[in-house]
Image 1 (cartoon, helix red, strand yellow):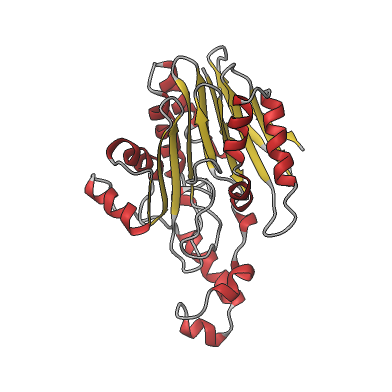
Image 2 (image 1 turned 30 degrees about the vertical axis):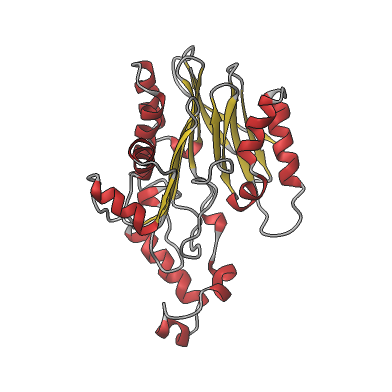
Amino acid sequence: MLLLANAEAWPGFPLTVEMLRAGADSLDAMVAGIGRVEAEPRVRSVGYGGWPNMLGAMECDAAVMNGTTREIGSVGAVPDTIPVAALAQAVMQRLPHVMLTGTGARRFASEIGFSVDEVLIEDSRRVWRERLEAELDAEQLARFPDIPLAPLSRAITDPERVRDTTVFLSADRRRGIHTATSTSGWAWKYPGRLGDSPIPGAGFYADSRYGAAVCTHTGEMTMRCATARTIVLALKLGRSLREAVDLAVEELAELAEGFLGGVVIHAADAEGHHEVVNFRCEGEIRYWLWDDTMAEPELRPARTI
C-alpha cells in the first residue's frame, strides 16, 4: 500500500494511514483524512480556513475517483459546505452523474443530510474586505457588489495567497489505485470559477491497471494540458513513471500565453513507484509519503524541475 498527499494534508494524513492499516476501503480512508483538513482553519487553502471569491463568498471544489471502476464523483463552486470531498463521494455513490455544481450541489447535500455550514472564518472575511477597500475607489465601494467584476479580476485575484489544493493518492494492486481532492480555490477568484481539482483528467485521474496522478497550484494550466490524464495514458503506452511525469511537464512548459504559474504533480504507478515534481513553484515543495513497510509517514521534498 502506498499513500501520497501534499504537505497541507497534515491534519488528516495520520487518520488515513490509521484506517488503511486497519483494512479500510482506500477511498473511504482518503475522504476521512481530507475531511480533517477541510475542517482545520489553519489550512488556508481548503475548506473552513480557505479564502473567499471576489464577492466574499466561499466556493469549494472536490473530487474522488475509483481507479478500478473509473467511477468519478465531483462537485464545484459549492456554497455553505465544508466536507465537499465527502459530498463528491456521495455524488459518485448515489447519482448517475459525475459532477454537480453551485446551488445544485448544495441542494443535493441538504437532501442527503449534510448540514449548512458557516464556511468563512473571521480572518478570511477581514482580509477580503481590506483587499477590496484597497482596490476599489469610493464610488465602487458604495455600489459593490453591483459593479462589473471582470475589469477588476486581474487586480483583485491573488493566486499566490493559495498555494495548494489538498490531494490524496493511494496505490495498491489489491485495493486499487484511487484519488481524492479538495480545495477552496484561488483567493478572490471570479464567482463560479472552477480550477482543475474537480475536473477529471486535469487535476486528477486514476486507472488501477496503470497508475494515477493529482495536481495542485495553477489549475488553468493543467486543464489546458489535461495533465493528470496525460501521465496515466503515457503509463498505459509503456512509459516509465518518471518519463510519463516528465512528458506532462514538457507539455506544461510549452504553454507560452494565457495565465502561467507553477504546478505540482503527485503520481504513482501500479508497480508502487511514485514521483512528486515541483514545476516552477517558488520555494521547497514537500509531500507526505507512507507505505506499509514504514512505521510512520514521512515528509519529503519534491523533485524540482
